[in-house]
Image (tube, rainbow, N blue to C red):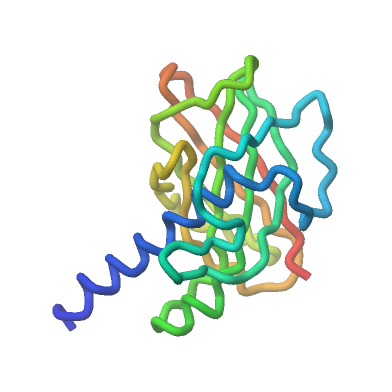
Length: 176
C-alpha cells in the first residue's frame, strides 16, 4: 500500500495542473449555462500554453468544464469552475467526481495571488462536508470533491487572501 501512495499523489497533482490552466483560459469557449453579469464578470485572459481540454504532454483530464456564476465579496470577484473528472478518478480507484476551481481578481481586474482557501460542500440532502483545503495552483485554488447526489449543491468557500481579510463566497451548482 505504501508503494502506491507516492505514484498516486504524483498522478493527482499532475492531473490538477492542466485544470488550473483551463480554469483561467476559457475566454471564448462555451459550456456554462450561468450568465456572467457584466458588472461582476472577470476577464479571463489566455496566458496559459495548454489546450482547453487540459492536454499536457498527451495527458487529458477529459470531462466537461462547468462555469459557475461569478460572485463579488468586499471588492474581490471569485470565478468558479467545475470539471467533471469522475471517469479519470475512477480509473485510479478514487470516488471524487469533480474538480472545483476558483480564481480571484480585485476591482481593477488584477489577479489576487496567494492566501488560504477552503470549501465546505452542502449536498442536496442538506449534509455539509468538513472544510476541504483548496490548493493554490497557477493563480487559482482547487480541490477534488464528490458530487454523488442529484440536485442543488452549495459551495461555501472561505478565504483569507493576501490582504488578510476573511471573505466567504457562496457558489451553487445543480447536478441534474
